[in-house]
Image (cartoon, rainbow, N blue to C red; front, side, top):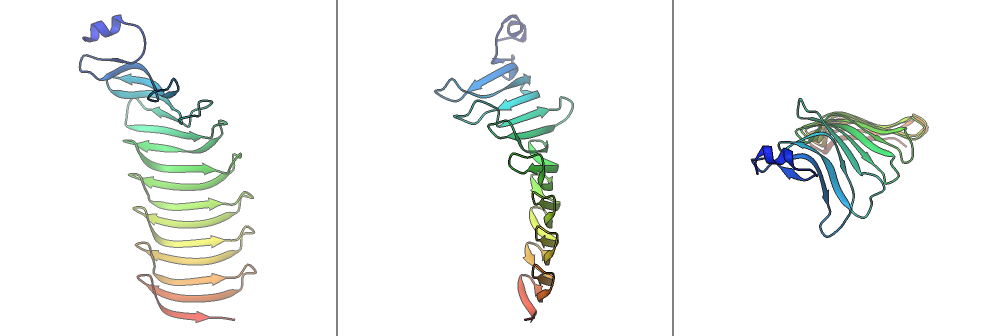
Length: 200
């Protein structure tokens, strides 16, 4: 099929002369009339908004990806079947990149904020209680805990002040009770305790 012939035809799901998807496409799940995804291709490359559906659920897309025609970046949103945003962020070359935000169920309140590079956690990951207080702050490097990590109670009280290296406890660690009193502390190396002090 030549591109000239393609342009003369009507309807979705067409290919260009090289056999690449071109124009509007709408694909169903095998053996079903339910849409799996729909969007527009430009000679094999996704362009603009694509809607993806979960099998058995067609009320609302489970994901909408907005492909930038001038780059390899994609703005992504994941949804519940009621159309509420679960999480959103960017992809680069179809891998998570930069800031991603996840929301509490049936709420626009942020539950988690994290940063990615090449589909791996890189940087600070912060989780929040529904009251807006920080629940945890942990640093990551290439998908592994690396650096400081703090865990809090829902009233803002610090419960654990930890340090990691290559995914293992490394350095000084401190633990507090909900009233803020120090209950334990110790030093670790490569995940193994080398010094520990217990307080009653």
